[in-house]
Length: 296
Image (cartoon, rainbow, N blue to C red; front, side, top):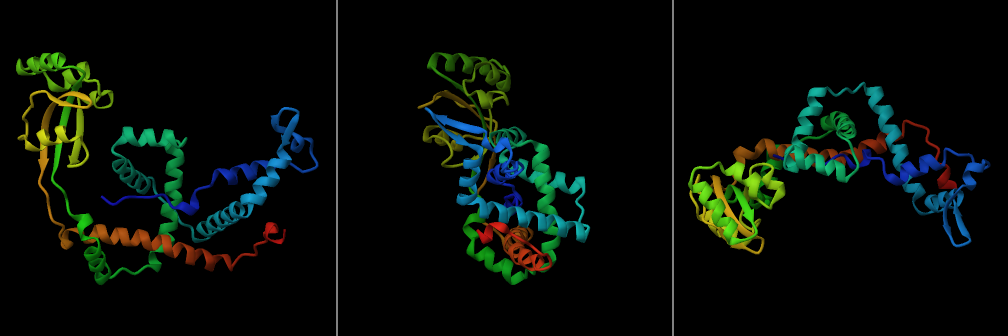
């Protein structure tokens, strides 16, 4: 599945937001004399902060805001629309690439963004893509050349899907192993005993992983096991693991015929990023744009 990135020029920077808020106050109003910081008897006012922000990055932020307004006007003029189905399909790609819904939600929280806001960004991206895509031509020769240049990255490594129960000491590991030998459920025991709290919630599931992702002792055992087998306790720097191999995926060499659509998607996405700049420069010529910061 191809990796996705939100269209960078459609994201409003924090600085732009600050500038918008501060410029909402008249320079003659008392609000601009508001103190935003004090150092002993000295103070920094909102006016002073505003001036520094404008001098340091005001032009960059304002240019981005102007570009954003032009995009909005063009989308309205072209009557571009994006359906909920299209948004949901694109969102699903991001969720999968993040490692699942839980990991995606955690990433949103880290970036102080709601799913609703994320979907709004997706609408912006898909709208732009609908305008830009007809300007891009991708040939079979382009696809073949990209494949040859990046063939190694498309090769699939050998992978193992496994679950584990991690405990701190050998005595507990033997106790859990005995319960498994007596027929108790692996997932239930993982939730009860595993100190790896993140995987324990999912019955110890770690998903598919290639070599190099886990500590050596864990990997050596996991890759040597048969599907559905459960290991004896394995000691690593993290404690004692009991490993349950649930699936295996053999290494596979990349084949162009199986990757044509994926590569076309990657090339199209790269093309949109590049062509967006050309398109924006063109459509901006249709507008009378006055930027007062350029004269200062």
